[in-house]
Length: 118
Image 1 (cartoon, helix red, strand yellow):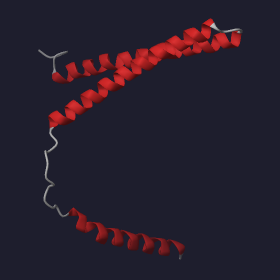
Image 2 (cartoon, rainbow, N blue to C red):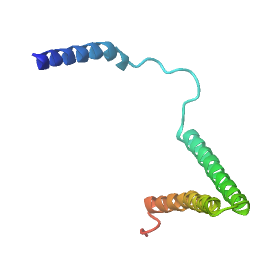
Image 3 (cartoon, rainbow, N blue to C red):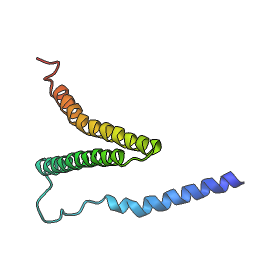
Image 4 (cartoon, one colour):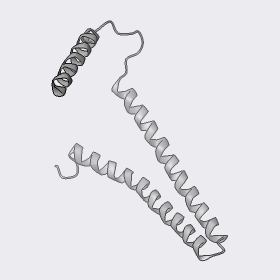
C-alpha cells in the first residue's frame, strides 16, 4: 500500500512540475544591449586568470616570509617544525601555481596540433 501511495505522489508531483514549467520553454524577445561575444568572455577569463595567478604568487611569497620569521623566532623544536611545515607548504603551493601555467600551455600546444603534429 505504501509503495502505491509513493508512486501516486511521484506521478502527481511530476505532472504538477511539468504543467508549471512547460510554459517557460517559450522564447521571448531578447533584451536590449550588447550581446556577449567570445572575445568578451575570453578577455574576462584571461583577466580573472591573471588576477588569480598574481594573488596566488603573492600569497606564496607571504607564506615563505612568514615561515622565515617563524623559524627565526622559534624557541623550541615544535615551533621550528611548525615553521618548516609552513615553508614546505609555501614551496609546494608556489610550485603548483607556477606549474599550472606550464600545464595549460602544454595542453594548448597539443590541442592546436603543434606538439606532435607537422
